[in-house]
Length: 309
Picture 1 (spheres, rainbow, N blue to C red):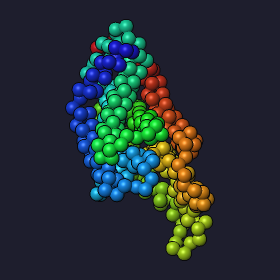
Picture 2: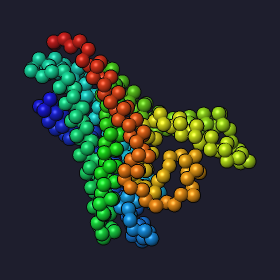
Picture 3: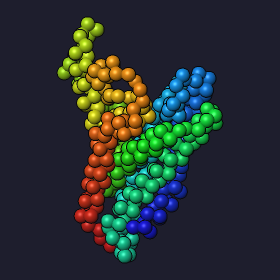
Picture 4: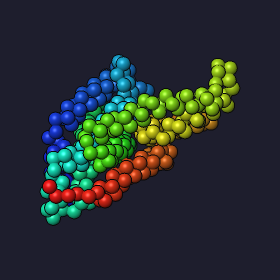
């Protein structure tokens, strides 16, 4: 598996599509972080604790925040790394030649997944470090230990999130023989979770609990609860909820209902452990989705017949 890992890692970093998309995300994310740092520099907050975390959550000048940009466009990197990881080998006829060597099937597919995950980890870590450097240049002081621990936790959650899309791309690469079919299926799932499910959640909530300007607060709360429940089926919404609680230390609830019941609680920053307890269900769900996608692709590939050419 070590041989497969290093070979696939070199292929990932040498592919033109990964380099182009990585630099595109890097430029846009760096621009949003730079504008956010300039906004903080011109209008410094009264409380400078956790100010580095604002670089990831604050939008400025019409640019989305880095968190929103990663949630929407980050999956494209994972999909592009995984949509032809297996079927391209079948198209070139190299699977039987590789597996004819002393390499087991599970080592081959595990090495591909781990190489893609390592590529995503290096790319995400590089972008976060560049944002950290921009903040250090603009603000003029380093972050404290609490901010560094939350930034590292954000990196881990982001890697799990991107790993889900990598596993999804590998799954479609195993299911479909043609790379174009797996790419279209992966992009269709990405669009469904990032666009259509958000619209469907609002429609379902309005049908189950219709609201009007004169509706009482209980009806509005019920409408928001239904919308949040539907969105919990989307890994994009799970990632946004999990990272919002990590990057916003005063975040004490998810959804309108929790905020209404906790509006009288003072907004003092929570310890990292308490923030993790709030988003633990979302984090476990992301890990489970990633494991299920890769597990299905693993089982299907292990049972596939591979004939020598």
